[in-house]
Image (tube, rainbow, N blue to C red; front, side, top):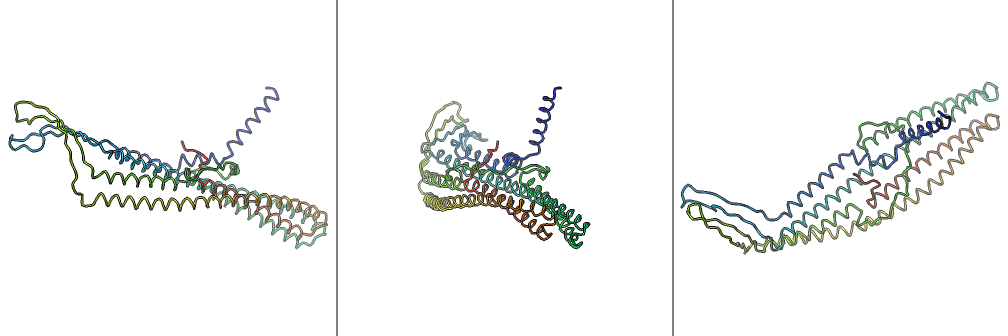
Length: 401
């Protein structure tokens, strides 16, 4: 095989391994939507609401009555009659609108469940990424402490540094090693929490490369068409209006076509049709009470809708302000971390040649550790701010299949 082909093969292999060892936030979210029981439960509620809506809006029942008595003069009911009610006033259509509103509420609840699962997944994802970065920071600090210990040992052996300084350098090294142990445990715990958020029972996420949650994924959405609670309240408003129609129509007459046969006791067979009307006379105020109840429910939903719409707008505004602040914080702390790292390198080099003291190195090391941890905290804050903006406007990064 030519050398170029061998190089291309190994490059493709390395790329494939990198893809396999990385976990994108969108891919994690897709896994959560496929595996979480909360999502499946919400889908079942939608199917339930669709079937209930169909039942509510079904055409009036067609029925057949037939019977025979032991004696012709003791027969009761109809010997053979087919009954077909007529929905002349649209009672079934009004009930169907109530059912459709119930389906809309169920779908809004599904969206709410998806947004909640997305929050769990992205939050756990960001926390694991932060734990990984803190582990890397601890490992870097351990390497710095090891280099400091080695340099101190050389100077102690050269009798240019008191032996007590070597003991202090050794204590710093032990502390750095324990910090690595603690951070590794925190990373494994964050990996377990991510497994729960994705709905999987196993998976070594702690060793996989996680990508940053990108703020460019945020879109500008219409809150009234994307926020789950606003969609649910809008459906409740439509439901209340439809229930008012159902209540008003409950006092309208019922019409029915009947196809009849002559009684069995009659030797001659006669067939005919009859139009039957049932006119409600007095329902003791039930229809009026139902109409008033639907009216109160409608006004309640409208007031709550206006309240939640204002809250949603302010919540998104606040989330966007926090996102802008978090982006600036990452930029500032990145510069501080770079500066602290460069300063530590210079002071370490000076310590190796006797130009700096051990205290100078420890102070510079502590400053770099604080800067690096502040940068990791700022990055976590940024990731969570992106998730908060997505949640504030009901935006899903992935559409479940």
